[in-house]
Image (cartoon, rainbow, N blue to C red; front, side, top):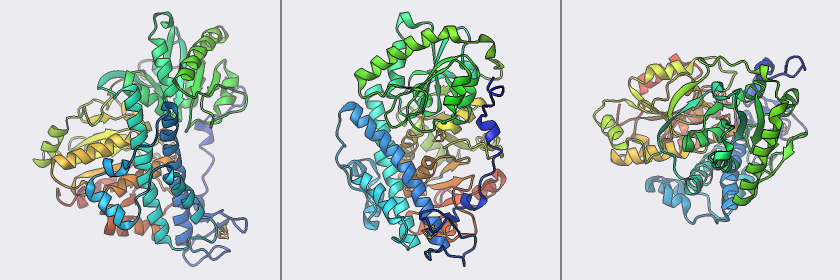
Length: 515
Ligand code: SF4
Ligand code: MSK
């Protein structure tokens, strides 16, 4: 039906080619004398900015965007709960040796909104004609990584666990096959699960047995982990959910929500409802939630709208091959429920070679089969995973709770950081000495890059499988791979081919002490 109405989805639009210069971060459009393309090291922008400065500034701005999203998430949660920022948060949460190092480097952000000022200062210093020292710009990128980790992911996860309880391991189902033709389908999509949690509470009531609540993206991953609510789709499949033709309501909160959803919903009967005051989409219903009470009221209203809308469904639309498109998964792990001692022992006795955190988005531009690569590695490594990549691993039936552990949504990457911290403590080493790797093979969003910088600040090597504004011929790529380790004992590197990453892992090992 979408095709008949000339509405495209991501699967068609992906054929639009990305700009190769922009992809490598070699284009500056910060001022109107540009955009300037600095394709080689001897070309400068109109203002005289070098390629190094331009690439570094682009990365800093990207990371600032990602950090603002995660910090906004935590900030919205504090508002929702009417709570204040905790004091000395980073000092309390981080390993003492890292806190000492970061203090020495002058990159520990302060609290009480000072970190929002840091994000704004990062944007300021990267405007035209301010910071022209690429090393200083990269130092700011690390600072934002720390902010993203603690005032974004750690804080948001902790608040979610405080108010909605910590997830516990359980089995559930995932992929488009969880959508049910014989039920009223309500999809929750986005990243901040406040409204989704109210919907979960509502559908448990006996009078709501006709509702099938399903998740999409990270709000979906969050209610999957906490309640076993089936996860229908990751980011890339969000339009396919609507195109089944059997979704009565899709309620979206914040981040990774494709603007195309509104056009698509018009082709079908689906009502698209935005629920966060920052996210408005023309021609949709807008019910912003403010606190628990309004979330409960809006959840009830959404169920009523969905029920009323059921009669408008044209039932023959659904085209999901049931068998292929529903997988059993084990989900809901946190550092409290993972077998940390057992894993630490296995590492010490060299029974496993290390832990790989597979994180981030599933960029449809990437054609390499990273999933089968991780599957092969799982003989020797334990995998911790979150976000859209966790969904992909689940689609292949790998989320078994034995070798592959699902730790939730993107902000729940703090659970991976915390697991690294605790296992390092059990092994009586610093994080950086441990055989840990973060692999983000298919990044899409600014958030995915910010997360990478957070892990690098902890001393963990970070792999990206798609050029995130760097290419190997730039000073910045060399800086991230070779210079960063002077301070942080970690590197951020680009490797687009699984086979080459394998060679790198074999050659270098994942950590110095455990080689
Ligand atoms: Fe070009 Fe400099 Fe303006 Fe960037 S800031 S667009 S490099 S003139
Ligand atoms: S949803 S940030 S596409 S992982 Fe968290 Fe997926 Fe990336 Fe959005």
